Length: 89
Image 1: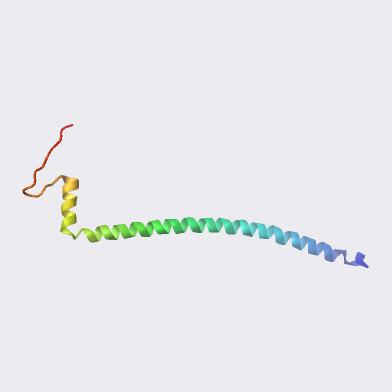
Image 2: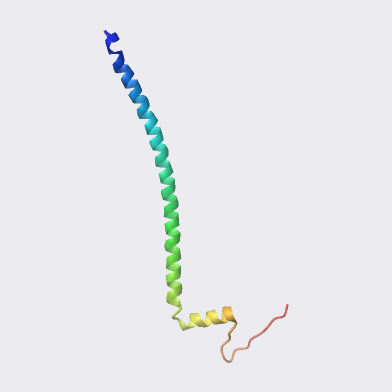
């Protein structure tokens, strides 16, 4: 009785083998894509943060106090009436 249906069992076994093999590959690809997505989200958040920093820097360039601070810090310019001190090494 079961002798005539051996091909059904063989077909089910082959189908199950192919299914489980493809599911393993799918899980592997999915985990790789998740890792890539996390990396891209981290890069995006850094880019957004840098963009905000640059926007604030550009906006502050119109502030006279900021311009004065940059001139004093980077160029060594001092306002009139201030005493400039030089240190020798």
